Amino acid sequence: MSSIAFVSVFKRYGEVDAVKQLDLTCDAGEMLALLGPSGCGKSTTLKMAAGIEAVSSGEIYFGDRPVSRLAPGERNIAMVFEDYALYPNMTVWENVAFPLKVRGITGQPASERIGEVLQLLGLRQMADSPVRGLSGGAMQRVSIGRALVRDPEVILFDEPLSHLDADQKVQLRAEIKRLQKLRQVTSILVTHDQTEAIAMADRVAVMNHGVLQQVGAPQELYERPANLFVANFIGEPPMNLMKAAFTGGGQVAGAGWAATLEAARLPVLDVGNGAIVAGIRPENIAVQAPDIAGEGRGTIVYREPRGDADVLTVALEGPAGAADRIIAEVPGPSPWRAGDRVSLGIDVGKLLIFDAT
Ligand code: ADP
Image 1 (cartoon, rainbow, N blue to C red):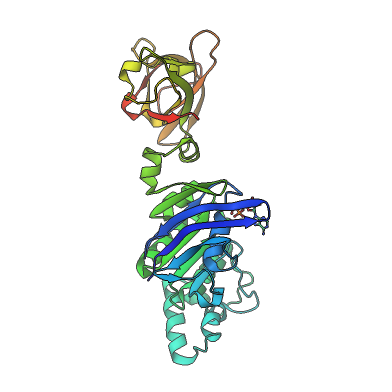
Image 2 (cartoon, rainbow, N blue to C red; image 1 turned 180 degrees about the horizontal axis):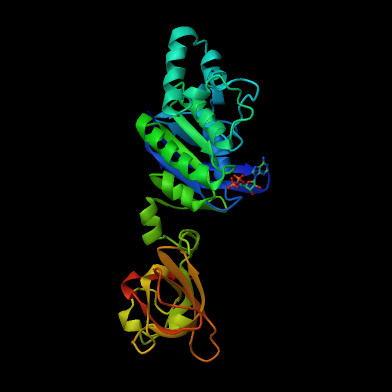
């Protein structure tokens, strides 16, 4: 088992800096997710680990072994792709056997390993079926089996669940996580889906425009986002963000709900007179009867029931001209309906302040 370390890695495609100054480590036995919007450099990072793309500068280590100059076949990695990349006319067994066969492992030693992996993945009954015609979920299981069968040092997952329907996604997420932990195989998962990253990974690395923004456990990214990009990207419904500024007398100047906050109750920050953005998660806003004192008042414009929670969009009665909305998530089913006038209690201790620049 090896760690994977990117040390000062850059990747340029002509004029495009796809990955900039990446310093990131995936610990031995860890599942690390690379998460970010399309074009942020996740796949390029994975391809550099695989050896499919060369680094422009910097070094990648598996344990203490530099691998940047090694061909993919010399790196002892396995990949699981979005589109499965199986041999459709071969059976499940033959597909899983393939990586062993090309390494000259056949007969009893191969059969034992293939049998064990098929058992682990619940594919024993399908061993003799051709891959063509299997469900997407079963096909992805086969490609995971193919990755596991030769005990690679590292498994790289490239959007492995993108083509699956919702049920299969949930099942395979849990399955991949279970197998990864069971085998303790160092893994990198590329995904644009935060739910997937949070459900499967030990730690999540958020990227934007080729730059690593933050790496941490899912809870850490959620509770202490390092910057506005991460704050905005992680969480559903998203964090409420509002421009504001600390002015000379320790007052807060801002529009909408930020204007209703009392400076005295805000976390003390050394931002001088700088522009800030105040952020609050929807679940840290209490919705209460309009005669109860709070940080603001408004009228509910939408109520979205989500089973155990209701997501309420509230149009605020801000200072004249400020037509701001804030999203609150309250335990559901709640008594609140569109059109209700309410008071909002903002848990100031949970307020996050970001540098707006
Ligand atoms: P992601 O996987 O996060 O969607 P990519 O790593 O695929 O992002 O791409 C990062 C950036 O590099 C994008 O701007 C993309 O257009 C560019 N890029 C990726 N592959 C190539 C390539 N082979 N040639 C030129 N530009 C590329």
